[in-house]
Length: 292
Image 1 (tube, rainbow, N blue to C red):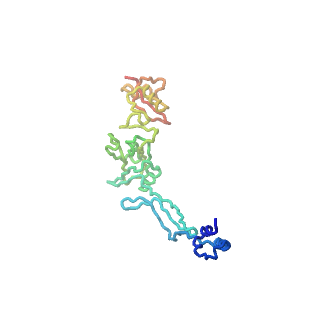
Image 2 (image 1 turned 60 degrees about the horizontal axis):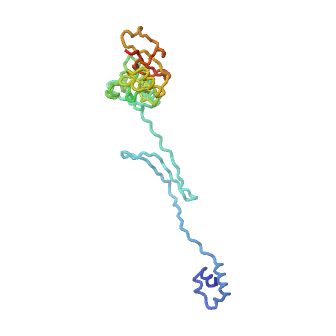
Image 3 (image 1 turned 120 degrees about the vertical axis):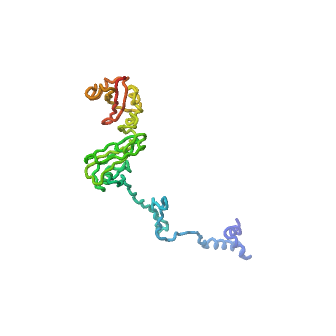
């Protein structure tokens, strides 16, 4: 490459300033050396720095009926040395625990119903105590249609505690859905409400329930023992015990042939099943009788 081309590549406009005397090889070399040795101009870059701002509180939440419910609070704090915001997440405010029971005063009585069927029994006792009552309320598994209904009640006040019923609450059967306690009542009360049984959990059936549903079987009424046992094996239900189901007045009371339960080797495959209920320790009890 000639001196003119080198000089033009480095700084083309430099050729415009060359006089005739400067275009010799010696002059050209001196010109190139001067250009190479000259300092480069500083490179211009575009930068932005976040301005320092006061703390900014951002909230996200759901708005219902004109009231904002705050789920998470995010605080943006500018960091002075880098200019970048640091984000910290604050925990959501604690949820307010709702009442486990409902209390209504009417006609000299306090009516009580279960609002939260999965609450800790200690919560029930605490809420009763707040009304000056000594009540032991428990929940036991039952059919879904009877969840929230009273399945057992006893009191030490001569039966002054009553149940209240609600037609249609338990399907075709009318069942108790709460209790009425006199406002002046101070004696002890024990009450059991039903809750929906968990998968695989046994429970005792009652009026309106299907015989056998409480132990995971289909309707057992009138089926043979052999048929019910085959279903129990398919459903992996074990621990079968037998109780005798009287079918005539001659088998009542002391005349019942098996008052202490029927030994398994006495039960025949063609015997009929009347009911199947939950026994102690996970046992399934079949109420059976010989074919008529």
